[in-house]
Image 1: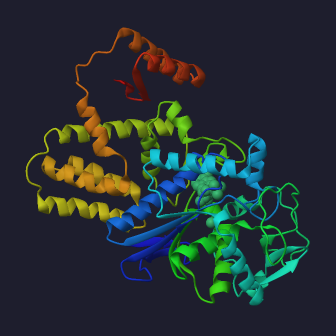
Image 2: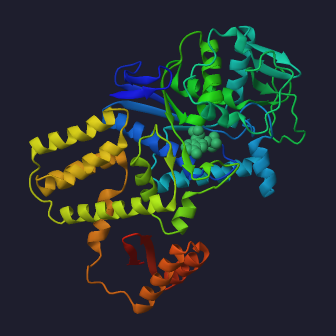
Image 3: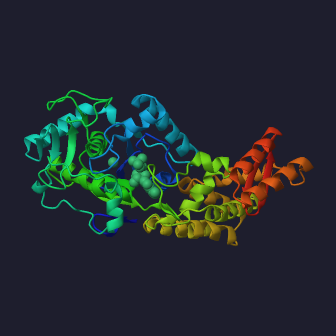
Amino acid sequence: MKIYNSLTRRKDEFVPNEPNKVTMYTCGPTVYHFAHIGNLRSYIMEDVLEKYLRFSGYDVKRTMNITDVGHLTSDGDTGDDKMLKGAKREHKTVMEIAEFYTNAFFEDCRRLNIKRPDVVEPATHCIDDFIRVISSLMDKGFAYEAGGNIYFDTSRLEQYYVFNDFKEDDLAVGVREGVEEDSNKKNKADFVLWFTKSKFDDQELKWDSPWGVGYPGWHIECSCISMKHLGEYLDIHCGGIDNAFPHHTNEIAQSEAYLGHKWCKYWFHVHHLNTNSGKMSKSSGEFLTVSLLEEKGYNPLVYRFFCLLSHYRKSLVFSYENLDNAAVSYNKLTAKIAAVLKDASGETDDAAYSRLMKSFTDALDNDINTALAITALYDVLRDGTNGATKIALIKEFDRVLSLGLIEAAERLNAVPEDAELPQEILDLAEQRKNARKEKNFALADELRDKISALGYVIEETRQGTKITKK
Ligand code: AMP
Ligand code: ZN
């Protein structure tokens, strides 16, 4: 299996540190708001990677942090604490906000068939670990105190900028907002490990430390949580591409300075989901959530399918038109599987099974090419082999793709084809279709609620309107 490694800037053969075992770390969400579908693109593609590693026989242990302290509005140590901002916005405490949005995040993941990582660790549970690692960095001369804060000294490293093949725009995403120079830093690239000189008198969460009462920087959280649960040698670190700099660059700097050896072998970065007006972000621009898509009548798994149709290293443009196209394809696909399912008895054909399985594994072995893996799925449906072989293959593929294919096909087969819908429902559905065409989503939502109140569930696709009795 080959995966593109941002460190080496090429597709590398995947060889974990220990045979058959994989340690995998994922930067978790900053829980001050709902995750948008851009964030979730990253988690969907990372989920496919994890599931494919398991599918290939690796024993995977995956850890994810929950950022509930220390992430400022600029990734470059300036601006407000995002959590505090969220708490103020909603007149709640930081911990209430963290709990609410952590639960909302995992609920979104559940709807998108994203597996929960083996370990999920909130940053606020690991303060002692951060203090221990920062103390060691101080002892080793990699960190210094200035103006009350503890900084990492990047001039002590042979090479700080390790991901320097990224485009300027990608690198700048995290640091653009509200950047102001911190005069305490010895070098421009130095970053905060521990804040005591809090700019925010009302910072809610603070802990005692050898350097005074304060709170950790965001970057140290991921290094420590990863090392705590996955040890000194990490196989794969994942995240959205905006995290490559400064976040992951800083993680490597501090982890390797602390450990005294190379830390993580493979860096897997998912490129952005954009809208026509630019990158989707929590703090600006269009903010689309899974709930919003559901409210508009989309099955969340159609969004997952939409993501899998593109390679994770290409930026992806979201539009309702593109999503509608994915919905049409998804519905056609599940309808075809439903037809095969009706006659899938008998023996599987081993030769056909191996041949068709090979196309699927070849696609994913080549840097998780999900688009080609979906083509392999269509090839199964087109193939001359019998139904039993096809269904056996689709079930296996869906262990990785997690598109709910068999379940959707079974649901389709459960609805009698001649089931008649009342005229009133058909009329409302027609009105809703027109409202959606005119992009009058408020009216479309109202009509959906009316249909729902009459006992029917409606799904709008380009193919037409799919209506089922509740
Ligand atoms: P955050 O909750 O802001 O810490 O981000 C969670 C994850 O989403 C990180 O891995 C980010 O790199 C990733 N991310 C942020 N914006 C986007 C986007 N527009 N498209 C894809 N991934 C994103
Ligand atoms: Zn991280």
